[in-house]
Image (cartoon, rainbow, N blue to C red; front, top):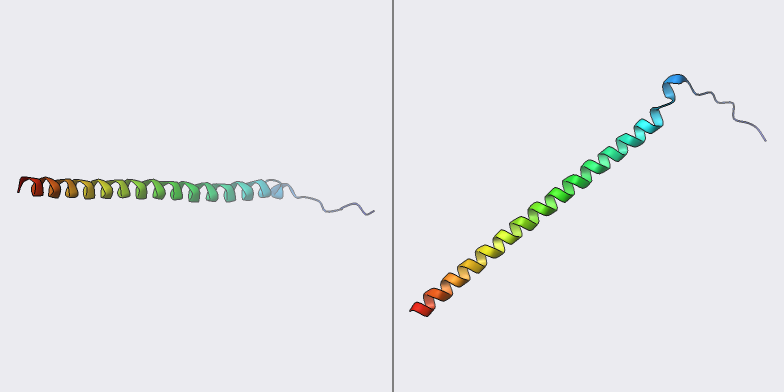
Length: 66
C-alpha cells in the first residue's frame, strides 16, 4: 500500500474546521430566522382569532339587546 505523501502547509491546517464552523453558523442563523418567523406568525394568528372572537361576541350582545 502506498502511503499518502501529501504535506499540509501550515496555513491550510485550520481551513477545514473554519469551513465547517461557517456552514454550521449559517445553518444556525437560518434556523433562528425560521423559529422567529414561526413565532411571529403564531402570534399574528392568535391576535386575529381574538379579534374575530371579540367581533362575534359584540355582534351577539347587540342582537341580544335588540
